[in-house]
Image 1 (tube, protein in one colour):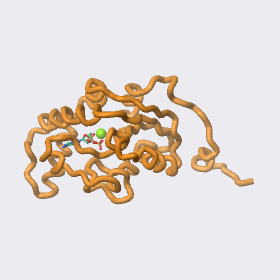
Image 2: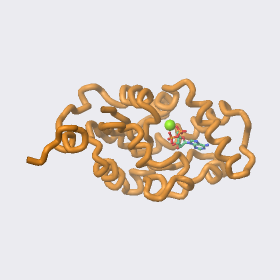
Image 3: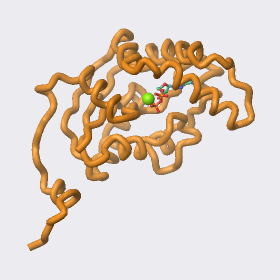
Image 4: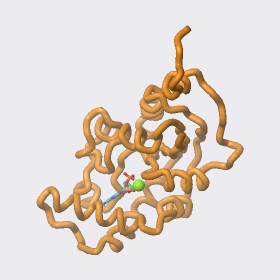
Length: 194
Ligand code: ADP
Ligand code: MG
């Protein structure tokens, strides 16, 4: 079983999409084991995105690749500089209003949640995903306005990232450990009806 962190970002809260977002994870068979509403200050947002020392470079490279794939010239060829700019924008965006951090648990939860959310850029995220369905945000539009890509949700990118992020956002006592019948239906190899 894996645990993964999801955060409904401030635009998700403001757009009344909390229930819609939660229901997509619920119906996937994953189990909700922690949830709260809070505001995160800029320091918290910076901590969150710098838990992984490679994140700055990775986020920069992803943005540069996305420009090139579309035949466009990226604003810079320096991934770390671009990553720093993205971080500054994220600090403003994610701290602007309340957010809903939650933990979802299940078999291969990290990959399942990423699939349900869709890729970072809503414009190219497939229809049927949270990011693909509810906004048309793109790298170019965000860059033109010098703001973060408003993509409604955060989802941990790997099992290791999830563990570090869960530690940052939740106390151990806030995380529930409980059984539901569907655990058996989904995961038990000896499941029988009668
Ligand atoms: P993900 O949230 O899909 O894991 P990243 O970890 O790469 O994506 O980036 C974190 C967040 O930073 C994204 O969800 C998005 O809100 C924002 N972001 C990423 N790249 C850019 C960019 N080039 N310009 C503006 N915002 C960005
Ligand atoms: Mg990420």
